[in-house]
Image (cartoon, rainbow, N blue to C red; front, top):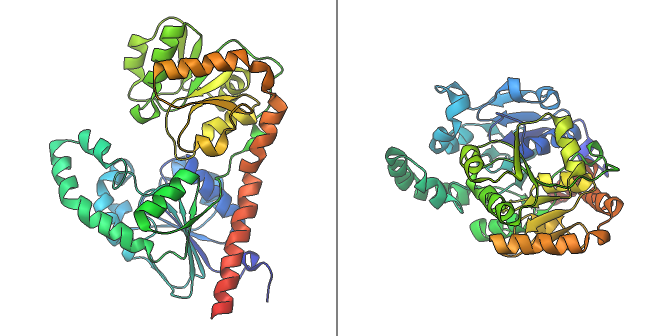
Length: 377
């Protein structure tokens, strides 16, 4: 018997990703899985090859019928109610290992009863569970009616499809807790891959704090703007989003908006800021890890994935309430203790979130499940 079944080229592997529209955190996980399983087939609801990396495009990519629906690359989320049926139509019974990447519908596929099905869960579907109320409030009247009619059957389907998963993998403690609450299943934590080696420590640190990411409500950028309006400290904002114009209107001159930048420019700001300000609640949060890989600390809200990635007093500082006073008090504390934050130590900490570490852990985990499955036959 092979000790490393996962590397067996005869192993038939399928990876299901909810949609391939752009390259964000979930697609970076998919890239790493593509490197572990170079012969895997990829299934997805909607695929836009113009926005997907060459690593993923090397694989055979198959879409569900959602791809053929009108304007699917833009309206894909509107087709959510049809996706469970689209997944059911997929017959994956020829595969030995099925990996579903879940934050949109992907795990509800038919697999061989003897196959291993690993669900790498970024979070149970937000618009069905924990963020349903937020999506509902922002929806049109027609969408609200549809959501009321569909929410119960979608939740029933989502829970039922979880029973077909051999083992869940969570990307952080908060996601592990949601999996337990939503599906009554345990999960193993394997942190998602971050390109640690792509970031460098700068010999020069400038006199500004950094806010970097999409400017949308759940990331709480307004909190950062209001805090720096009050303190007068310099804040640089990188990113775009629906709140950009409103934030510009309320921001004082000490706050600078740079919009979208090149990767090289972003890395320069990551490595030269005094610290990253991270006021929202994220399931994991890749940006704080990228900043720490650049040797700079993070001032983060003490919930969500930041609790997995940031070490208080060593790689960053936490604030426990999403208020202006709490954030500014955390920054005050940081400025009076800056000498204890060592750039080399901060970068060293991030190695546990490296791409290589993810691949090693996931491969060993999947291999063990396959070994167990083979022995049970």
